[in-house]
Length: 119
Image 1 (cartoon, rainbow, N blue to C red):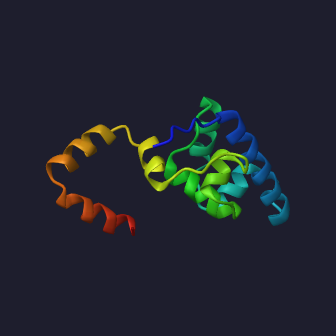
Image 2 (cartoon, rainbow, N blue to C red):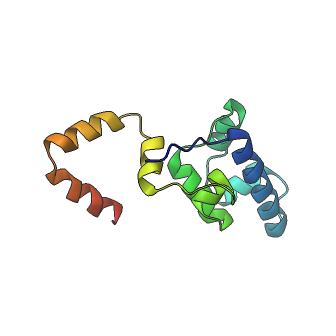
C-alpha cells in the first residue's frame, strides 16, 4: 500500500476556502452560526483547527459531503494520488494492528466487516 502523507496546512487552506464560499452562498455571517445550522459541533472544528490537526475521518466525510467535494480532494487536493478506503480506515484507527491480528486468527470476520462497510 502506498504511504500518503497528509499536509495539515494544505487541508485547512482548502477547508477554509470551501467554508467561506459555502457561508457566503448560504448567507451566514459567523462560523458558529453556520455550524449550528448544519448540526455540526463548532467545538470539534475549532479544536482540530487550533491544535493543527486534521479532523477525524467521520468529520472529514461530513465536511466533504456538506461542501460537495470528495474526501480525497479535501484531504489531498486535485494534484495528489487518491486514498483508498483501506488507507482512510488505517489512517484514523490507532488499533489497526490489533484488528489485523484478530483477522489473521479469525478470517471469517472479514466478510462481516466488508458487509458493515458496504463493500
